[in-house]
Length: 270
Length: 256
Image (cartoon, chains in turn cyan, blue):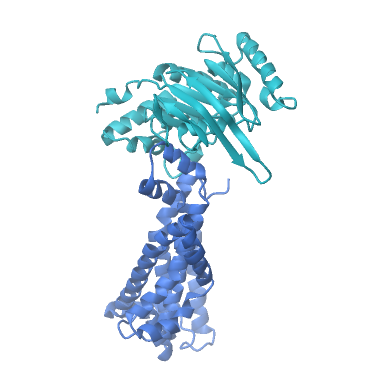
């Protein structure tokens, strides 16, 4: 397989969540984290799942990733049921989850080395391409502990992109970063999404972030975890998180979120 | 450079004080020989091959026993972390055995294996094995589970995730355990060699004890010097590269 072929945009994937339910037993009671969730995500769509903590949005992401199994229902990726994790669906976690025993390059190569049909030289070229894409080409031999939080998340993004997945699943990947770094990453992520054409499912409790990134924003409510509303964000890209038009959307979504949330919904408005 | 100089001055003064005290301190030079006699013995015994062959015998026992302890201990440690049944059996056994100074195995080893290499090997393995098991299993169990989840999404399963994720993730613990195992093995081997005559090989411990029998304290001290040198060398060759790697990758080793 050639480099050109490897770097070619894979067709993004369509995801179908079909009546997925999942509950967790705590010591006192059973929590219905997901109550018969139906969700269709189109090829190449950028979808944000928003809700307060404990509404099941991360659980749904893990089920789509194949890291957890639903109690009932199923997830289809391009019509095929998801039974476990797969290279076509990469996950970006809130904690960067980079491996400290490898340098930056080693981390980005990790998934590529497990991908058959490439020579080692090609793998290194591909990894270099993605490091360039996230703007860290110069740090390929750095150790993970030497990077800032934002850089770590960029490396994690390059590592997730490197095996050329068709779906990118992101679980509050920017939540632990400072506001400025986050804003940069919003821009970068939109650019990368447009360049690499992936289906992206992005979990967040930050409404503004969701409105900035998503084609669609899906609102979850907890106890039991349900989808309550959907918003389409019809703004041109790249979007600026501080724009007035965006503020309009996030106000609307926040208001809706408060309506579905017991308490004052402070967690969700951020 | 300045630090090297400081060290040289310190040790040179130490040796000078020792030399002067032994020569002019009014002590018996048999009981308290000066460093020059120790050096002379080292020179002679190195020349006639006594020291070299004893060192070889000891190092061979140590390396073979230590390697066997690692080869046995690391897989057992992994199993202990992974399988409940190992945790409740081997894990508990290792905790108990680690509390036992491994020199306590010497009498049993002699009765079981006689004055042979097997007895020495047994003592060294007993010194190494348990701390390696415990360190490996602790290392695996303290690994953040997110590493494995991330690896899974990238297609790592089974043996690959053990070798490429779990083992390297536990490396900081593992190297600590290997060092501890080495220290235990080394000490117990010396105790065993000093205690008993092994018919199959004359090691450094025996050379040291032989010096006591001859009332040749220069010999005793010379062997002690060699033991120190071996310890330092082992640290440099076996562990320092690993520790440098750990410090570089994990960013540990300096107080910032």
